[in-house]
Image (tube, rainbow, N blue to C red; front, side, top):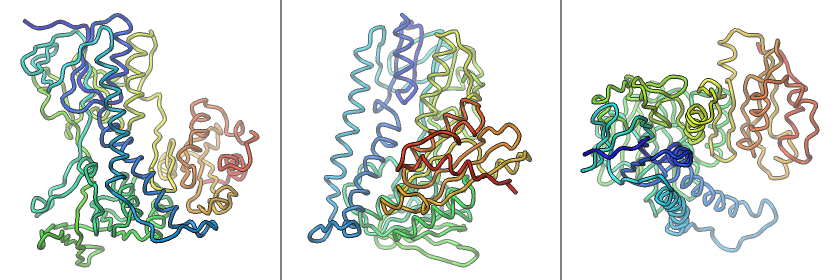
Length: 459
């Protein structure tokens, strides 16, 4: 006999646990299913561990730069990779165990550990248990994808997940993919002491960004000794006596890069292939993402998809916002929609990139009249005081409404500073509100009014 619940939640990423708490708190009987590690990508092999590793890499970087600040560190700077991994593991373990304890101690909530598969639009099987509910929420996440590269199976390549188990220093790390994952690991391991080569198919790194942002990011990476190869194609991998040999065409010329290890960071795919979605009639797109509407409802009434598996955002913050949208609509009598949110994200190299709203390219393509302000970080006192003057801040404004359309803050504190712009965008007020604000000195954010006071027509 099936066990009846009011709601079933599949997966414990950023959406699932918080939604379980809201539903259970409202008196609904909830079942939560987790097949592996509690917390999903962010906690186990995404934000928490990678930003912990980034912090260790920055410590090594700053130790080597000590003399620039009049601080002399005796002897050769070395990195204990086993200790680096142990510190990361400790933080991950605390987060994972905290989520598991929270869910298992939650009133009105039952946790099932196993793989969930649909047996119908209202039925989910977990091992020997058959669960039924009128409301089902899929928070299954995504995983690293490997492209069809000839010879790739001949080498023990790494992904963002298996990188979490590395407790040694690769002699030479080859990275396929020049976007968020590849760039963060690339700079990180260069700072730890590895030789690093980043290989990108397209003509520039992090191609969704404007050309000036991509160029500045490349300059940052190369300034630290990361080798960057762009405009490559025809990849082939060979296991050459324990080394990884990557053959390619680079800007029309044959090239080869040989390293000790290979990280594949070319993209991710949703964890929807083995959920039995077809038995429930739940539609997916050509890439396997579950189709959802503006309220995150699937093609089957009573079933929602949240987080990375719905293709409406690939970040921790978009997943959590998915939870907020669903909870508000179901429990608060609200009407929240995915289209309410403004795209925003960060690239956590050092210095970081904070992005909000439209890119300059998108604004130009929209055909609207717009204004633009831009200032290099080398003009900003806080950046000069820290000897971190790479990057720039750029803000785009609608010439008619005077509302801010988008911003890119590439530089010291950019991942935090961008929120002051994002909040003004949500308020839908003219840029003059923040342009006339008095900010604290000496900070990076104090230059936002300056940039907005120097706007010029976007051509």
